[in-house]
Length: 275
Image (cartoon, rainbow, N blue to C red; front, side, top):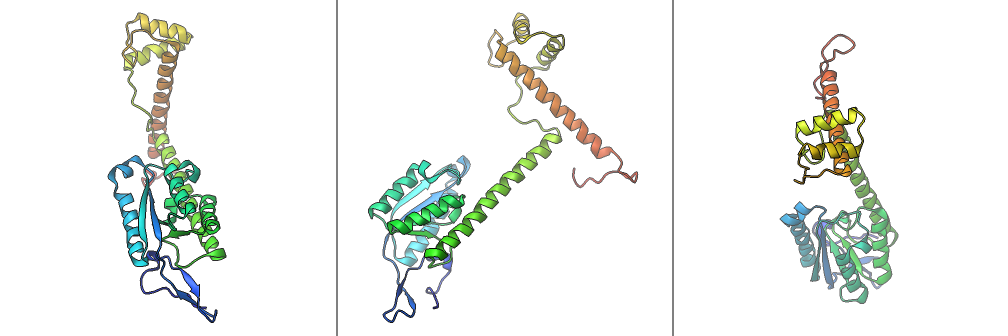
């Protein structure tokens, strides 16, 4: 059997097939269905620009024009992670309710990772579409897949999306660790003056408690980071934590600089490629 959709890119068509009278071949049958277009972006900045979701909906519009679908709803999940379970996405749940009730017959999405980056989540959606009798139209899948082949394709693409997401997280963590070892200080900028931090450091080195440090800072007339006049144990603890972060950042920066200038085993200057 040869499954050949009409001319055009496979990614722009979700093809429906039916058996010919002699049951020996499958022939193309365009679907005239009501479709829901779904789009998702992960970050607030992507949501604010609207460019990502607009492009996704336009891709679905092109597929709908080719297939003869009528777009009856456009669902956009802004600033929603692909790992957020579908049951925690109210807009997507509303779309699924329309599909279950027969008010629409197609859920169309530009790419599989827009629906979910979890293998289990994508397979659940696919199996739900099969059980409830509607079409899950993922435009970056090969056309005409259903049954075991569709499940295999869904699972493979979902595994790839999940792998890419995990690798991106690993690369981000590695980059943050390298930056930390080079002396980069993360978090909000310190709002404490150097004299305040030096005083708190001396008091701690002298063995004073948090309550005593807070009282000393208050008696010295030093304003708290929020502009108050009375220091508490928690605000003193926060100050000491800031001092520890600054100290660690300086130590890491110094160690990194020493590593850059330390000769290698042959007595040559170290390579600057990792700088």
